[in-house]
Image 1 (cartoon, each protein chain N blue to C red):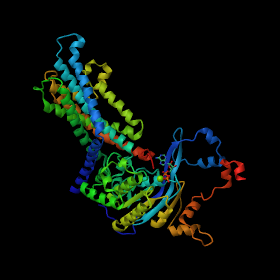
Image 2: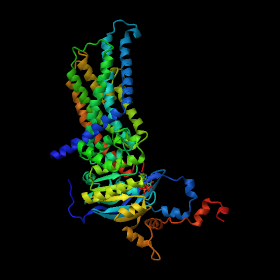
Image 3: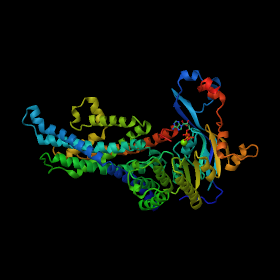
Image 4: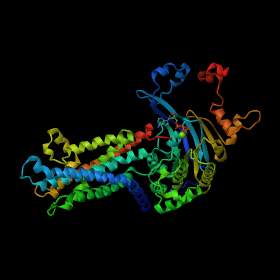
Length: 305
Length: 276
Ligand SMILES: Nc1ncnc2c1ncn2[C@@H]1O[C@H](COP(=O)(O)OP(=O)(O)OP(=O)(O)O)[C@@H](O)[C@H]1O
Ligand SMILES: [Mg+2]
C-alpha cells in the first residue's frame, strides 16, 4: 500500500479546475424579461458548448488550492456554490473540463485506480441498498477495498457503537432506520476502508449534537492516528470553526477567500471586533442583508412604507 | 502478487455476496417470480401436449413436441435470467443511489463483471433446474438417450455471450436512469423473436433468419436440441460450440469496453448524480 513519507507533503492539489454542466435552459420568454446586465454577464461562458435547449452552468470556476497532508481543510459556501461538485471531482466521479487534480502526486484521471485506493467519501445522501442491513452493506463496501469480511465486521461494530447505534439495528434492513442513523452507517462505511484522504460532504447534516461531536472526534482521531488528510464541507459554522485548520469559501464556483478560521475573521473584522465565522460567511458570500430594492420586488408597497 | 489476487478475489466476491443477500432480503419477490416462470413454462409445454387435439391429427409425436418446447422454454428462462441479472445490476444501483460508491471504489470493471457473472450463472442454474423439475413432473419424458454433458457445456458457453450482451444492455440504465431499464426489455424481446426458442428458425421470414444467425441463443438452442433430442440434427456438436465461443470472445471484451466508455461519458457530463 501507498505510504506517504514526510508530513509537509501536498495531499491534494487542485489546479485551475473548471467543471461545467449542461442543464435545462430557461425558457426564451423569461430570458427576454431578464435584466440586461445579467444577460451580458452570462454571455461570456463559452468553454462548454450548450446543447440544444440546454444552458451551460459553471459549477466549479477556475478553482486552485492545495491541502497539506494531515490537514483538515474546510469548504464552505451557499447552496449551489459547487462544494459537492468539487468533492465529486476529487472522488473521480466527475472528470474536470479543465485543470489538474492530484492526490499525493497521482493524477486522478491517469492513475484513477491508485487514487481510488487512497480516498473515500461520505456524502449527505446516505445511499445504501435499503433492504440490506448495515452489516451486509458495510461488508460489501469494505470488500471492494480489499478488507476481509471478519475484519470489516469487527471494525464496523466498533465504529457504530461509538456513534451510538443500537446493536439490534446492525442486522435489520437499513430502511427501518432514521436518516441520522443511516448517516452514521455511511460514516462507518468510509472509515472502514482507512482512507488516507477522506472527503466529507456535509457528513454531520442531520445528526444530533452529541453524534456530531462524536463524528468530529472521529475525524480528529483519523487524522492523528492514521495520518489522514480531510476535506470537509459543512453548513455548520461552529463545526467548521472547531475542526478546520484552513477554510476555503466558495461562491458561485469561485474561491472568494482561503485562510485559517482566524485569518478569515481578521479579513472582515471592523472596529477591532472579532466577527463569528457565520458573519464572515455572510459577508464574503455577499448575502448579509436583503436590500430594500430586492424587497420591493415581492412585497406590496404599503407593507414597506 | 498473492495479496493482489486476494484483493481482486475479495472484490468479485463482494458482488456475489451482495447479490445473494439481495435475493435473501427480497425472497417474497423471488417466490412470485419463480411461480410466474413455472406457470409460463408449463403453459408453453402444454401446447405440445395439446397439439393432437388442436390439429385433429393423431400421428403427432407429442412427447417429442413437449420435449422440444420444454428445452426452448428452459433455455430461454436461463439465458434471459443471465441477461437480466447482468443488465439490471446498474439499474438497481441507480435506483438505490449506491452507484457512486461502487464506481468510486478501486474496482476494475472486469472484476465487477466477473462477480456478477458468477452470481448470475449460479442463480440462473438453480432457478432453471427448479422450473425444469416442476414442469417435467407433469409429463412422462424419456431422457435416457440425452447427452446431458454436452447440453450443459453448450449452455455454459452460450451464457458467456449473453453476459457480454447483458453488459452492453446495462449501459442503457447508466445513461438513461428512468427509461434505460425498460429499453433493455426491447433487447430481450428481439432475442425471443429471432432465436427459434419455440420453433425452428426456418419458419421465419428470410430477413429474420439472417438476424437469427447473429443471436447466440440460436446456436445454444440448436445445440441443446441436438444433444437432448438425438436424431433430430445430424451436425457435430462442436459446430454449435465454435460460433458460441467466438461470439463470447467478441461480446465480453466489447461489452466491458463499451461500458467503460459509457462510464467515462457519465463522469464527464455528471449523469451519475441523483441527489446531494
Ligand atoms: N450532475 C449535475 N448535473 C447538472 N448540474 C449539476 C450537477 N451537479 C451539480 N450541478 C449544478 O452545479 C451547481 C453546484 O452544485 P453543487 O451540488 O456542487 O452545490 P453545493 O455547493 O454542494 O450545494 P449544497 O450546499 O446545496 O449542497 C448547481 O447549480 C447545480 O445545479
Ligand atoms: Mg452539496
